[in-house]
Every structure is written in C-alpha cells, then in structure tokens.
Length: 340
Image (cartoon, rainbow, N blue to C red; front, side, top):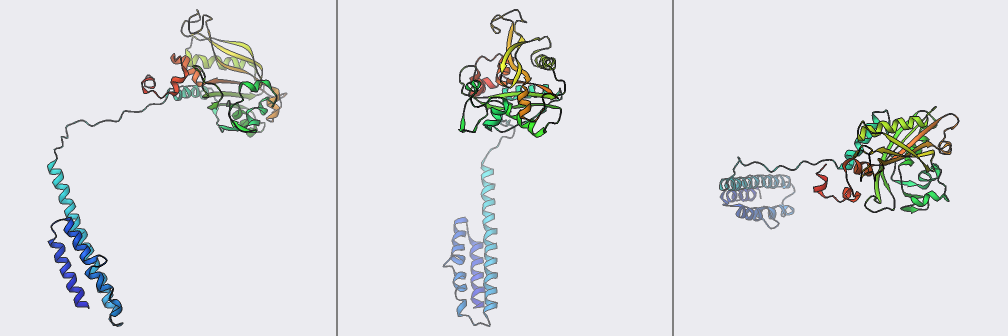
C-alpha cells in the first residue's frame, strides 16, 4: 500500500509539471484528488489495511495529498502570473494622461445658514440642545400653555402617530425638556435647532422645514435683553447697519409677544419690492416666557424670568441669498445648489 501511494504521488507530480495550461492542470487535480481520483481511491481502502499498518498508511496518504495540493497551487499561481504579464505587455498605458478627479462636494445652503446662526449665538454664550423629532403631545403643546382645546393648535396640528404622539411642529419641546433637566437651576441659555413638520406646501412653506429657537431664563431677564440680543443677531447675519422693529403679537407660550422685523437690506429702509414698500422685513417671533410655561417646567416666575425666540432657517436663507421659492431648497437641483 505504501508503494502504491509513492507511485501515485510520483505520477501526479510529473503530470502537474507537464501541464501546459490551467485547464490541463485542473484535469490532473481531478484525476488524482477528485472524488474518483487515484489518491482518493486509496484513502477509501483504508478499511482493508491491517490495523498495525493503518497509522503509517494514513500518514502517507495525507502527506501525499498535501504535497500534490502545494504543487498544484504553485503551478496555478505560475499560470496566473504569466497571464497577467502577457496582458500587461499587450496593453499600452499612457501614464502622462491626467486622472479623472471626483468633483468636490459642498454643504447644502441650509446647512451653511444653520451653522452661521449657531455661530452667532454660540458667540453670545448659548449652548446647542437637540431633542426627538417624534414628540409627545405634552411637550409639543400642553407644557407650552397650549391645552387640548386651545384654538392656536389649529395652525400647528399636524402629523400624528396617536392621540399623544406626533411629529413635532416646532423645536420648543427642546426648551421644555431642557428646563425639566435643569430642575430649576439658573441660568438657562440655549438654542434648539432642528427639523419640524407642519401641513404647509407652497412657494414659501414646506411640510418639513428647519427651525432655530432660543431660550434664556435667569434672574431679572427683561424685554430689553431680548431686544438687544435680536439686534446683535440681525447685524451679524444681515449687516452691521441693520435695525430691528418689534411689533406686538400673540404666542401662547410668551407674554408679551412680538414679531421682529429688520430694516430692509436691499433698499436700506427706503421701500422696495422685497420689503413691499414698507422698509421692513419680518424674520422671527419672540417674547417673554409665559409665567405658566415656567411653572409647568419647575421654575418660579416670582424668582426668575426669561425670553424666547424662534426663526425658520429656510426664511433666513431665502432672505439672505435672494431665493424666491422655498421648494428650490429641496429639489436637489445641483445647478441651483452649486450657486452657494
């Protein structure tokens, strides 16, 4: 049996060395190591070998298999190397040709404007807070002085998952969550940027858009502090010569409340098409935090006060860069986006 193993190994090694190509080498492998191959047939006859000789025969069979597999792999690698060398020799590569560079990407215009807004307020000492987009009705409405029967909900009731859960309609819930986490500690000074959702879809509205809201709570925070903060923001975003105007308004979560206008940066306040002849452009809403909102979040309105404001990032971008249709911001038209 041992002599047969040596004879088959020698024959197989000679056939491997004589193989002219990969196909013939594969044939040799099948002939000796395949299911019906010569060496495989010998290993299946192990039961006929005397028990005393069986370990030596088994070792010899395994050694022969290893030797044949190594020889086949080396020969196959030589064939592959020869093919690669022949392919390279037949090709002409002009290494002087320039490569094909991938175009560099850029940040979306909304990302750029959002980062500009964040930079302004971070420079004033604000921290950036975030919260979930799928929000509880309590945080989105009730904790902001908007109970279930409040008529102001009609403008915001939007995409509900259940009676108590919806896609947030503003980032104000982040303010409530932050106040709860602070547990009455002062000061609170945050901005809350993020995506919000409402039932709007036209040239100046989208069912999904971005907001940045701000909140400051401390002792003796006044409306004058709010006015000064927003004036500094307007000048950083739209030019140092800008002025602001606060008009009385109504928001359930602030009292008093005000719409904030900036002097038109296109005409300098003289009146033009952009400002509709008024010299002013509305940019955001604001007000003193309502005492009930403070109470619901664990703050004593007798001991502290605060202000809040909120703006649409898309509106700021449209005003800053002269964009007349909000839908352009979401159409993914590279010709438009590359303009910024």
